[in-house]
Structure formats: structure tokens, C-alpha cells
Image 1 (cartoon, rainbow, N blue to C red):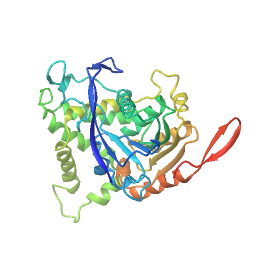
Image 2 (image 1 turned 30 degrees about the horizontal axis):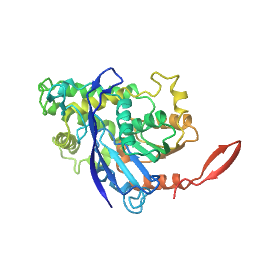
Image 3 (image 1 turned 135 degrees about the horizontal axis):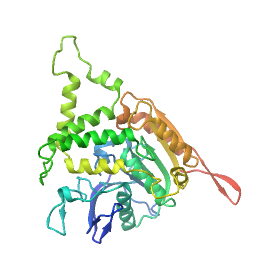
Image 4 (image 1 turned 180 degrees about the vertical axis):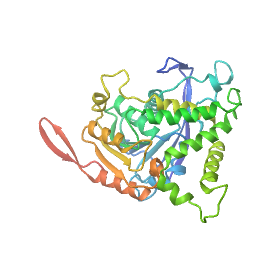
Amino acid sequence: MLRQDHLFHFDNEFLLEAGGRLSGFQLKYTTLGQLNHDRSNVVWVVHALTGNSDVTEWWRDLFVEGSPFDPRHHFIICANTLGGCYGSTGPLSINPDTGKNYFHSFPLLTNRDMVAAFDLLRQHLGIDKIHTLIGPSLGGQQALEWAIQKPETFEHLVLIATNAVHSPWGIAFNEAQRMAISADATWKENDARAGLEGMKAARAIGMISYRAYDGFEKTQLEKTNDTLDNFRAATYQRYQGQKLAGRFNAFTYWLLSKAMDSHNVGRGRESVNDTLKQVRAKTLVVGIETDFLFPVSEQKFLAEQIPNATLKIISSDFGHDGFLVEFSVFRKIVRNFFAEPVWIEKNHNKKIINTFS
């Protein structure tokens, strides 16, 4: 399996949806496998909120030999999103206009800005068609937006635990996390560690929304009836906060959660429903029945509005994080999806075309 890390540099002014600008940016991206001769084997992955470009770290079982996306046969790309902290331009980067780190001065980003950056990378790589675009959660929001903007580019679209418009419920959870960050006395500082203790608390809040009751019951239930303090669930929450603090920063957490909040495919367009009908890719929508951050009603809506979409619901004790846990079930769903033929109507004559080799 050939795995390589790369940097893409865009050296021109990059205008942002909210009115800000960047003098330029870089994206770090990771590839697995090799392009075939006609460049028809590209699988583009868009990562979730705290993910990075290396899918072998956080979604490994989906990109191994014998999986639906086998790197022996597919060329797999994942780029760390604009605003990220894993090699792409973000708040800790140097602002070329000032020679200093951006920190709090980094401009507001939306999913449309991140998609625009991805598309510049796609053009740079000379890729006209993408066999499959796949993304969970925030990555699913971005994948959906990209498939709307460039409907002829994508042959297949896999949306996991995501939505067309971020809900008031989801925004409230994100705001609670940002309140935890801003309550940290260091947050106002221009320093890479600013808000770090607040981010630990934010992550603990987030974990409650990412997981489900039964998942905590299975993994964090006390072994005896004698515990008075330092419960397993409590130490687990502190562990998750500390773990994220070792690999992330509060500026990026704040920025990407804001991008998630602003997700609305209908913004500036005729309507959400009409916009979803612009998707041309053969689409698989996957929901997780215990996900109360992105409830299955949101995936059902996507499947109803995207033409000829397929909806599958996964049973899991792990809530929203089920997409990171239920590998065997998800792999089976994806494999079956690609095994199904797609009907294409041309000149009023329908014919079956096999879509996966």
C-alpha cells in the first residue's frame, strides 16, 4: 500500500463567504494507492471535526485490503480541511501579511470556503471525475455541499451521520462548548495554548452528544456498588479532554464548530429541497439510530430529497460516534451499495449500468 503525505500551496488571494480573505493557504493531504491510467479510481474522503488527512489513523478498516475501498485498486485522497491544525492553514499558521500567527484574527470560515479549497486541490491534481466522495458528520456536510456545487464531478456520494442544515440542537451543543473555551481565563491570549483547559471541558460536553446512553452504560458502568467518587464515567470525560488537548487547539475547535453551525445548503439558493435535488451522484445516506446529535430524521430528509438516494440505518450503542466503531456493518452496507446497479435514463430509454468493479 503506497501512502504519501503532500502539501498543496495556493498563493493567490482567497475570498471567503463571510467577507474575509486569506492571502493564500496550504492544504496537507494524504494519498493511498495509485491513480489508474484514466484517473477513474479516485475516492475522496472528507474528515470530521477533529480528524486529519491520514485515514489510516481514524478510519483504517475502511481502507485496507479486501475492503470496499481497497488501496490496491483505488486512489484514496483526504485533505486536512482549511482552518485545521494538521498541516493546513489555520489559526496557528503565520499570517503572511503580518508575519505573526493568526490566532484570534483568523477569519470566519464556512463549509463552502473549505469546499472551495478542496476543489482548487482537485483542479491542481488534474482530477476531472471522482468515483466516490465520502464524509461523516462535519465532513458529510462538506461532501454534500461539494456535490451540490460540482454535480458533474462526483459519480458516488456517501453521506454518514450528517444533515442539510445544522439544527438548533447542534448549534446549542457547539455554543455550550465555545462557552467553556471562552470561560478559560487564557482564551483571550495570543498563544497556541490559549483556552486549552476550556477546550478540555468543551470536549467533555461534546462527548455527551457524540455517544449514547447505552454506550456509556456498557463501557463506563461501575464494577461495584461501593463507589463514592472518581466514577469511571467522570474519569473517562477527563481523559477525553486531556487526549484532545494533546493533539488539537482551542482556536481550531472554535473555528470548525462555527463552520458546522453555519451549514445550510439553502443559504442564498431557492430552497433547501430544491438545492438537494441538484445532486447527480448515486447517493448512499447512512444514519445511526442512537445518534441524537445528527438524528436519523435528518438522514431520512436527505434521502427523500436527493434523487434516487439509498438510506441505511445502523444499529449501534455508540450514538454519533458509531461511524467510527461499527466498521463491519458499515463496510457491508457500502459493499452492497456498490453492488447495486444504477438506472440512468437517456433519450427516454432506461438501461442498467454497473457502477463498481
